Length: 207
Image (cartoon, rainbow, N blue to C red; front, top):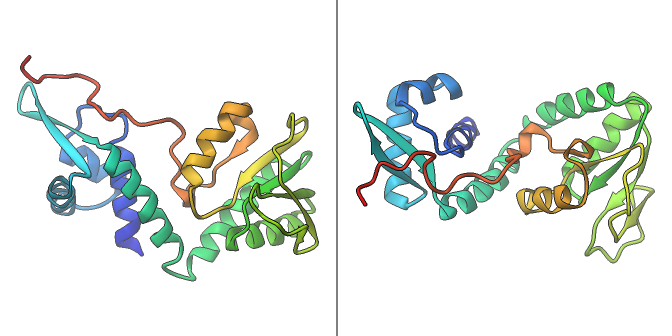
């Protein structure tokens, strides 16, 4: 589980396409430089990342479109890897509800995270208005209504992404419809808040 988490942190750290050293990466994701070097070699070979040389013997590592897709697969593996993730999810969701006492929530997607969110909301005495699931044929889940269409607005409401598949794509779709502050993406889903640069921020390749 920790290995997959470190790989996800590594890919997330490269999404801006900025100049960065292996030492900076190791500090940012709290792993050894040797481990960072091993990840770079592994992901370069698979085409998940690319590297470009910058002045003064520096390098720019950046995620490829295939790498961004691979990140979604790693997220799914990470989420199903260990029951200990339950504690991390509870902690994150408890904090979300603690900070948002005076609003109600919609949960997007049916998964184990949905159930944990309902449990945390009940303990925090926070209202869940329903579960958003565009493709579900069910009318309710765990005594909550299933809503098949996005609301027209989110007045005094927020949406928590709870699905374990396609969470990244769903996040991008939701922020096109609503303000970003209305959409909650918990850290354990490793959802990027903006689309990554698939090319380095500064291009030093010879024209």
